[in-house]
Image (tube, rainbow over all chains, first blue to last red; front, side, top):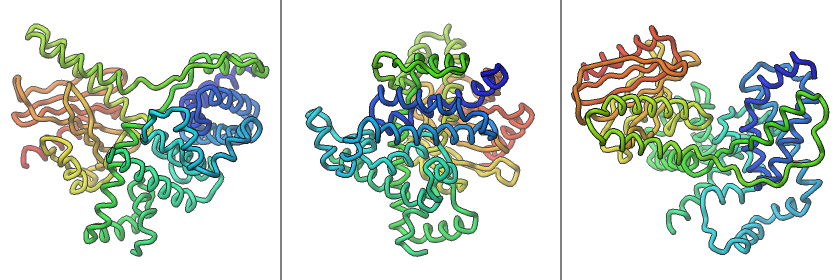
Length: 168
Length: 258
């Protein structure tokens, strides 16, 4: 990569690496897979960077997060097909967690990990990374109205989890 | 407004995603619907719980290095992966708390160290300001309505901070936040000026001389500090100094006629 483009990549994309890693962590639910996904995503970002004409700042972040999100999805299909199947049955999945760690108690973080991916990602993008509905729609490829209803349903589920946590 | 649609509408309202017209409709409805007000409060609690309980992560330094190296060489990254890595949990909050406790320890030490403590407190305030600018950390209660922000602190603090809206003067109220500064929970009020964020930290004055004020610059931020017999103020922003002083003046005036 020539030096001016390199400087631009470092200035525009790399500041959002923590955001990319956080999203990958919550999508993949473990550190090593997140590491792989972010690495793959950044390779793609490098490759397509010439095609990226956005301004520095929020839109670069949304652009990188879109790539991370799509990479995570592809990666799960290819490497962890069983993980996709498990997600169709949340209860089964939560039992799997309980088996691994019988002491584990319900926490908000755990409740987030148990949400279906389309709910999990809107929470991460909004609550942890402060993206606008429009940006979340761009990243996840759905209309703003869908973003709005998914966020609301995801929050309702987290709220239930929070209540259970308080009851304990 | 019909209730089936209300939850998503209210979420959009708290997220600052409703149009001005919808905001008015919804606020009118909120004012007369106990059920919906309760719903809103639960959502605000959830938001605070998310901020407190769901961490963000930092990319491992080795990952960052590999990506930077790949960009420099222009070649594909090695297919060989780094060894499976430990979890990089964010240590921000525990560190911030430790820093706060350190301030308490220093402050209680002796009068000779009061100046040091003052500087440490400024560091503490600045750290809170910077942390608040990280995504999702700015406000616990997101509202431009002072009559929403002020009561939000009830039960969360043992004092009730004055909240003003200077939107008419170009400093709209954005919301409020519970923060932890100098070893105690404090109110942080968030105001805006164009793209700039102004944090106002306020807590009851407990000791020391009052009436003094000072100004310092750190890491590109301006910090204004003053005390009244009732309250201690810290105002922090990357806004130009003249404008920040103008804002502080508005705040002092509003407080003096309270």
